[in-house]
Image 1 (cartoon, one colour):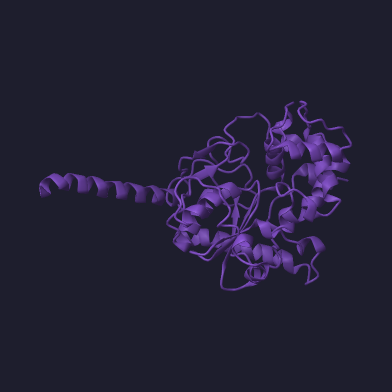
Image 2 (cartoon, one colour):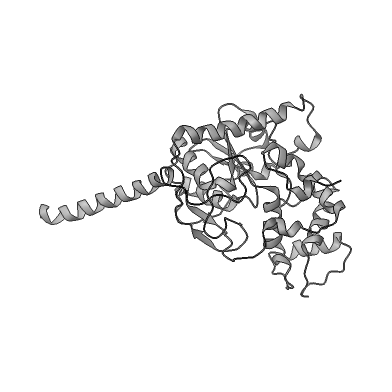
Length: 344
């Protein structure tokens, strides 16, 4: 009987070894691809499809990508450098923070009691994947996105949440994304990339509000389309009523997460998300986290890059975009594209 069970035992043991080695390969492989935005000389990876766009309704478990031999200390240095850079930029205000750096969105904060993690998780920057991770930390299987037990504002009174934002006994995490890519992703997702369509119930409000602010008539059940230029006009018009009134999918990150008030230990960038998650998983011993999981990945190939959407737009429109997202560029060390940088 024992001899019969030994092959099963060794098969199970081999499976454990393979799964463990799979994550080790992630940190100790050979780099064969880089991110399209590599302004900070970070070692970055990009999926074969061009990276997560967070723009479709599907989900995929992306294959592991190999990277340069990254020792644990180098990854730790990356996070340290990001945090130090943010603090240095905030210090330039000499305590006199602009009003839009003193606003925040409590609904964007998520909490894991098990790991004592407070995350400011930004829409169109991988938040759906984070929801799955957080639900799995609660012991839930599958790709659940339910927020009832992970949104901090639903778990505690606002007074306690306010304390956690600045408390020293919690691990704070923020996820960010290049402002240009984030804007394009929101447009492609919420406005069907400009294709004429009768918006579904989930997206009707986006079209209705945009048409109203653009001064155009709206009729439910009628096929309509919004160009990228009109989308940006809508975003800028919406911002005039105050950043706190903007839709969370394109609201500037700096007006959501109090980046100069809350001391974020881990600044996660969507451009390097697999490496960042692999480090975080090891650092905090988060056993439930699958670093290769990517929800809402855009599987469609498109000839245009994010920058292409902005080419040829009016100068005043580009200037408005730069002003609105200026702190997102500067605080999180994202290069300002030449078509925004060289505005007269």
